[in-house]
Length: 255
Ligand code: FPP
Image (cartoon, rainbow, N blue to C red; front, side):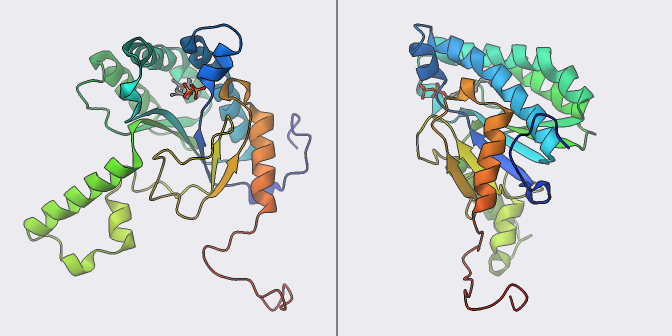
């Protein structure tokens, strides 16, 4: 029994892994005459309400797109704000996340020279502090891009072929998956994008091949655990076939 949950979700069919493209912070701020960065700041409580909701519902992996490889092209003041915001957020929230049993992982090119040294240190602190937690793994897709992730996997595989430790004929779907940034991460069952945009924007390109996508008009700062639950409700109403077909003439038992 979850006290805040009004809808009739099937708690036995909660997605194991939910990915979220948190979009619409800038528009949320503009609509209020605020600076775009204030929209990002307003996204923090939304994110942490979602963490609490995910924990209550039994989601095991939550991947959030916090900074894409394309976001470097934004105004330098906004980029600087987002870097410092990540530092502040990790300092403010890491103990809370640890107390909740959340494991924090940053996925992407954290070692990029453009990522400030202090942020790299805070990322390592948060990852080390929470490494043994098992209730929920929260993946910050940061300086992340799905295409470059695949390029990096191909490079790693190419190096192994060059040094003779891998036979090209052994390259299959699993082999590619094992060379992605987080090889132990299950594929996302559900990917949510906020703010009415309907694009994948380079998010988990390989892993989301069979994910259900739910697009909501809600701008990220207005998102919370209730909207998460309604997106999961939509997910539960879909039939996942992974490319197979269901013969409607068969009864459930025959299937
Ligand atoms: C997209 O909104 C959001 C981002 C590029 C940054 C995501 C950051 C947060 C949600 C803040 C909280 C979380 C962390 C971990 C730092 P947008 O700026 O593209 O919005 P717009 O499309 O309306 O301009």
